[in-house]
Image 1: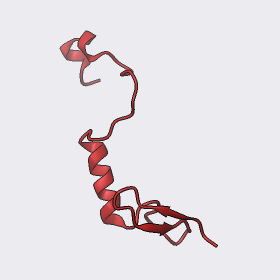
Image 2: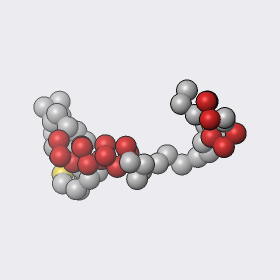
Image 3: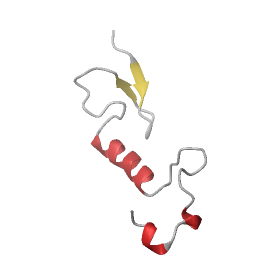
Length: 63
């Protein structure tokens, strides 16, 4: 029997099987919603920044 997980976006039950293309999401829509939240920085990983941007000069910001 397949393991069942909840879609992180809408909480629908999703079987954890190879045929489920978007696992752990229920479908492409929920996967894209989650990706958009990361891209807009609605979601963040806790911790200190790896680089202190305030100490960088203007020419170093893009590298």
